[in-house]
Image (cartoon, rainbow, N blue to C red; front, side, top):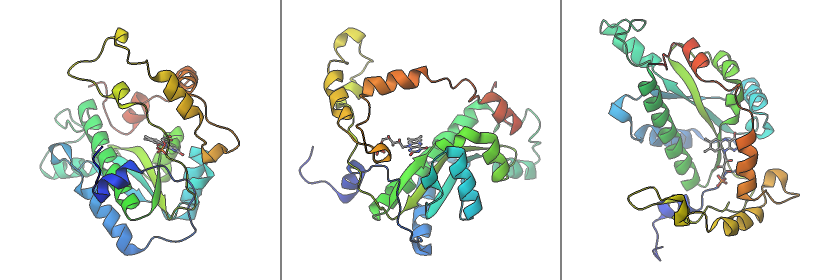
Length: 257
Ligand SMILES: Cc1cc2nc3c(=O)[nH]c(=O)nc-3n(C[C@H](O)[C@H](O)[C@H](O)COP(=O)(O)O)c2cc1C
């Protein structure tokens, strides 16, 4: 790696999830900066088909923490839920004479859904990087999606919207170690996906050992499992109840199209 790195790259190389925050509010200027950065992210076909809901009502925060089964969500001084938002575009299209309930309105299809999801994630990640650059800490939150219907009700998410991820932000009140990443050769390939015989897993035992030395502050009494063991465990988890098509259909999306 280059000897001198710009501050942005230093920030990105030092990023880590922060799950404990000081009980200090984030000021309005900082919030405006974070939101401007998120809006500056790229947007496929410039559809701008995401929105983010700032959750500052403690009762709503507590409910989202309950859905995610992670108490620290309720303590986040600044909490966002990023959502796929074709509702705004449906209203705009309607004003141009397009009936969103008709087949003519294509912003409810699977292609558009994934396009909007990508945009939402890019915006969230830009905000995360901006927050870290300002010395704040963040954690991205998928856990509230354990109760998608609950979130939809709680946040009054209308037709053609769908929750994507949360982002909890605050002044860090912990200093977790950097979590290891796999050797670059395991994740970056040249021109073609390597054959299994090409030795892409040769470095796995060393990576397993490195990961097993990492302590997650959520369970600081024991090291985390080796990477292989984590993958084996998660690959066996039954997530067959976490279906998408039915819930997206209830929000007006036609993901079979
Ligand atoms: C899509 C996504 C969802 C995540 N959801 C959660 C979550 O619900 N709760 C949590 O504590 N961390 C969550 N994380 C953070 C990951 O656990 C974390 O990024 C990973 O363990 C690597 O650790 P690091 O961010 O400290 O490098 C999520 C990360 C991503 C990308």
